[in-house]
Picture 1 (tube, rainbow, N blue to C red):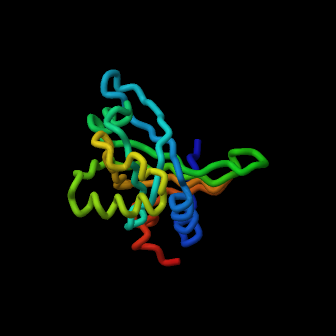
Picture 2 (picture 1 turned 120 degrees about the vertical axis):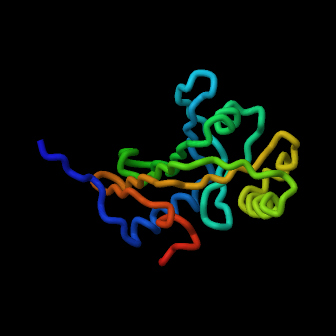
Length: 167
């Protein structure tokens, strides 16, 4: 049996599509491993783009996925929404494999992320400074981009970073 490679060569079109999916995402599906059982779990989280173009979020210590990310920082995030019509599988989506990094409150990085997050998610001003909330940056290790049927790419971290974009 001959195995075929379903992935296309990464090009500027794929890089732009991945970047645009991250930039337009207001939320994503976060996949984690539960620390008590090791079983996978998925949560919806709010997303914003950090200044370097990678995803970030603001989450409460009370959330189950916070405990999971603290125990096991490896995670995945799915972004991309189906359009109003047509088969949902024909619409682009991006799976980011990443390591979650909690940002220490009061640091210069925290203030930079706070300003960036609030510029994109102004309603978060209501809770951004609650003591149980922390910013989380996602260091992407690789990504799978599905642009619809027959359009798949395996991307490296530099393929989606804002400071590495060529288009």
